[in-house]
Length: 435
Image (cartoon, rainbow, N blue to C red; front, side, top):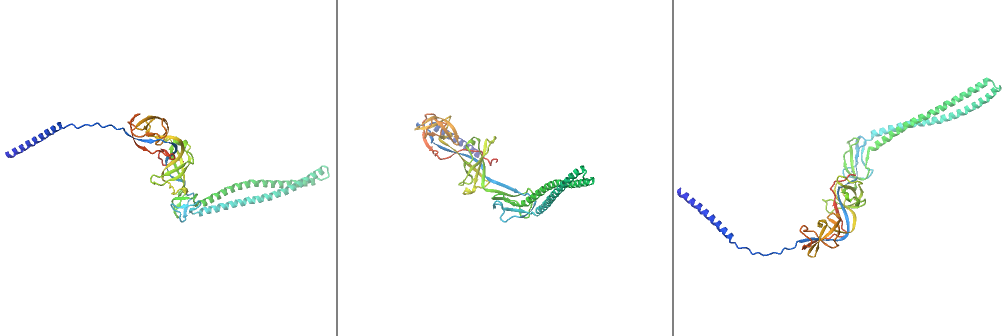
């Protein structure tokens, strides 16, 4: 046991000696390492990318977003209560219909009976008015005859009055003539009074007739409303009833949309309101459908600006009859509206402007040129100042450049063709604007 412990102690001492010796040798090698040979490397000028300026006409394009919707869409509701007794073949979701096509028919028998009764009452009142008119004609004739008889009796009374005063006629003859005159006068007065009573009666019947005719018109309208027809040519979005269903007044029966004419409300920044006008051309695209595009025009522009978003609404109309592929309602589209063309302008990338100046590559040096920004146009700025057509404007490493620094030229960015449109801005994304 003692021999074993002795061997372990000796092994431990040997390990410690080896580790210590190795460390000492490593320190000696590091301390005596020869210094590396040093060489001086020349610092190269920075490599810069440049943009060649071009003075040209600049068509502007305003970008907005919106959701396509049918220009004309209506939810047709029941205007009468009754059972749906007919839905023609072919009338279902997605079907195309023409204006006036029958969509469905509601049982109209009760409304037809109401119409018959209302027409009967109209006929009754009309008969009463016709009877009054006949009675009026007869009374007029009797009044005329009575007036003639009264006139004859009056002249005879006047003649006998003269004779009686001249004692040439007896009082009996005078009294008899006077009674005849008074009798004819009473007959005439009674007939006139009878005729005067006919007018109020006729006016009362005319008022009643107007009410009866209104009842007929209402009953006719109820019968007509039992036939639900398409108010315009379009496509059925949803049909909510089937034959045998009970339709209640106000219940939505059919949703119909005009898929030929599509409207897209888009929102644009308020600052571009003076440059957007009706009839401006517009190109529409859908992000998930590369290769497809639709052409439309601005139909109208909202008269006011939203004070919260500082945007205004423009309404684009698309005629699907003129498109290779119809634009479907519900698509979220990007609308590029062609605005006015800025003539003969000089543009530079906006990022190239530092403290109202740009750096121009002049052979192997960067020269600082003062510029004045007239208008920012998307990623470009329209400028004036110490810059000429064709100058190479530096667009990289601007944070380390000073006036006169040496540079090396890298890529020259493609210049903007004169006929290429520039998107001014991307308006706030929106699913639509209010009408």
